[in-house]
Image (cartoon, rainbow, N blue to C red; front, side):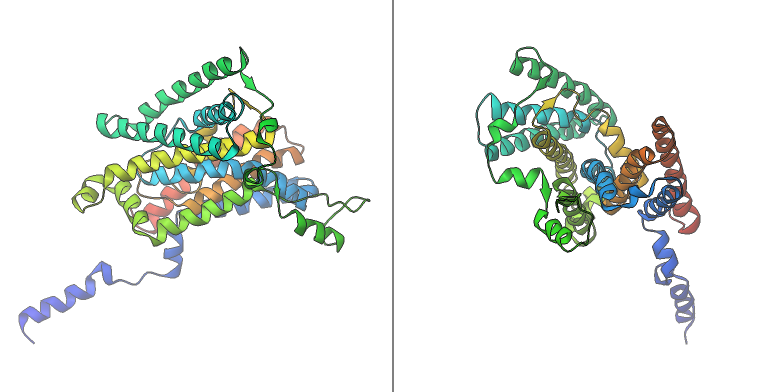
Length: 373
């Protein structure tokens, strides 16, 4: 054996890239670990302190309904954060999209499918404008989207007063929707036939007349689950997912490697705006109205859910499924407190504590356990 071979062999043995990683270490590296652990702790807490009806089928649906709407926003916010940016205008976009959607139906008399397409197009355009301003001016996305938070909220106020003759609420939208099959895609309850069958066979609770106490799954929950599955697949199994992580981790290196950084960022801003539009369409069709306060502070709640789910404000790290669990934690706490003897005003305290603990936990795992900086 030559001297060169003697030096090469130990070097290869010491190469960190060849080192096997234990299953526990691989598990610890998952961004959603903190959210899963948090959900287990929160569930255990309410199991001890809350009324047992919280864990009934009706209680579960009561928790999932608000969690799903927030979760749609949180998943999109998580993707944008992984890409190295974040959007503070997402809550105002819910209200603005509700305005566009409602006006298209009532003032302009458009059919539901056209109103949906027009609203999504407006939202994608506004999201792309956000992204292009960030890219071209190199201003922090915090500043740009904070400005759009006020711009979109103001446009919503002005637009609603124009459309209604002075009111900040647009009512009677359901009268213009009619019996379009698309209404069932975006509002109401899904799988009602299944729940009727379950009630008929005494598998779920029902009233004396045989009607199930829970008539179906809110459509927003179906969208929530589908979006979580799709975005997780995109992040982990496609080239686009690799681009998103690369752009958030090191945009200069990503650009040098041929990644279309500007296109990815602009698309993520547009996706976030479209997610807000989806929530707007769901809530407007469910309520039959829209108002200027729709989506108020949802931008902060979505970012909090994404952070609880393991996403970092610095970019390049996070997961859609983590945001999924983060939103469920949020919904569990917000609704769960009503099943306890605690004052619901404690919700803000719980929320802030969860955010701080999640960030500390994720930093500890990444730095101390995995060695990732």
